[in-house]
Length: 338
Image (cartoon, rainbow, N blue to C red; front, side):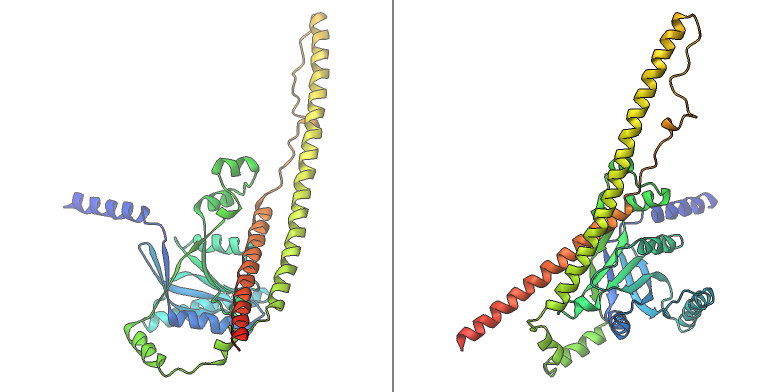
């Protein structure tokens, strides 16, 4: 009996280690409304909050959330924020509400969320949580008639490199990692209870057209496009500065290699003379010589994040421009009919 019990525990442990990969993030509609309300109320300020739910197989269920207080650069305020989080989870546990942390949500401005701070937050969460996600909501993008809601996680290969803090070109080629492999976007599935679905179905027939429905036909997208282009130009400048760092590194590296070759040639000539004189030759490499001191290669993490951000801005500009053309063609057709 004891052997059977021990075997079953080993089987359970093996099953947990071989958990299926995360395929879908299932969010209740009420949670999405809470996230949107919190982010819209404080826009353009950036806010965050906790996600609560369950990890079931390949589905991460988000059943509840609560906002964090706006953080300030003060140790006492940060301690109060941590106490607030623990107190909120204790209160939810007392009323039998899911209080398992499955990640966090945050707002962003024009999609500028791919930063080192986001990666560090992911690493801090995953020290205690096996699988977690970050829900990113962009109020500025949502004002253009699109629900800008994304569920993100870090890729496993990127986390391994980040733990070792090694983003050299050799390691990136070894792991076959590029800038598109940092984040993984997980599909979002919105779920509601049968009672809420029935209530929404009953409301659909009597729901009048609201102002927000007309806003989707707004032809002016200049402010959004202008800000995206401004951020895109800033990112291009940052990427140019990162490229200059690498150019400076490769110039120093080629200069050092030339100095090493000159030093080795000199030492070989000297050793030939010593052999001719019957003396012991000197070693060809001298670790104490500064010529042989390796030059540290700059990290490629910043350039990868900037490239990711550039791609995000380009996709947003492309999407908004495409929708604007569709509206213009629609209005032209209506005008021609008149």
